[in-house]
Length: 119
Image (tube, rainbow, N blue to C red; front, side, top):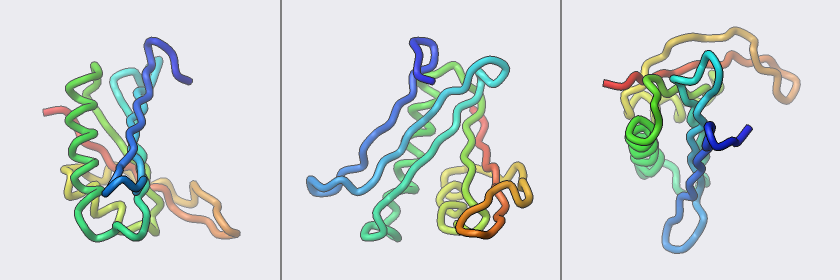
């Protein structure tokens, strides 16, 4: 839910005037108020150029500078190794593996939780 006290921020990733993806940060509420989740996507056309690694580093800096948080996390699918590498390059560490937490296209998948703490 977006409220005055919970401002979600989503940014477009534009390359040469074309929408190439987006990245957002979602501050949490209640007992999770010192954490924020990030989510992102990038058009396959732009993969392997370091674009998302840079965007994740930027959103982490923005999040820690803007919000009163100490923890930023992301939850990639266990099958998404590229997303895991993006997070690791941005200083995130694997915190947890939720076994069979996701069900997509008739198959169970693990959900991973990657985290980075404010320095």
